[in-house]
Length: 257
Image (cartoon, rainbow, N blue to C red; front, top):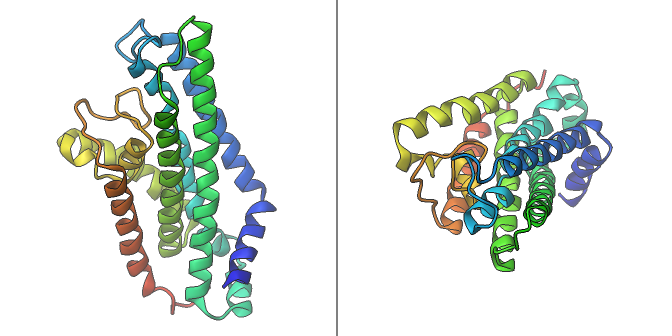
């Protein structure tokens, strides 16, 4: 099992796709910080950076990294079928369950990096923006640590969910589109229909784990959303992962080609 996980991690370290997606997540996170800090206190989008609410809106805006981590997860599993390497992989290791677990473990590790990088960029950019405006940092170190932990765990779990979804769908393009449609369209519709339901949705729930609580977040969160406790949201994401994994179980004996 350890060998299989190492093989999957080696694939990530030597694939430009991973670094490309990580760069996109980092760039979008930084862009959001620049745009929001420039509009702070001048619109209803984000409060003044002199306030805890304004600074929180900046340092917790890691949603693009969460979304990109989910997309990355689908590619971890579906790329085997796109590049026709699945046959070689399963001939080398006939135990398909072991391969699937190794891919999920790699997705968890890779996704966690997305969350960590985004959290560091958001925190540094948020503090710098407040400093440039002459405002002092009012968020405590424990608050920032909690937001960072939420971003790391949320991104890791979303990547794992994406990995299982990619294995279930197999088509890389279809899997990526499915993730984007769910996160950017279906979740927004469901949140619009019920604010109370929004906190249970995977991407929105992961964003609240990372501390986001306003319409300035990505994805935009409905007004009045009441985030679930950290552990409860992590449990929901793990449940979603388990449900998808159960749905994937019947595909393990399908023909690879």
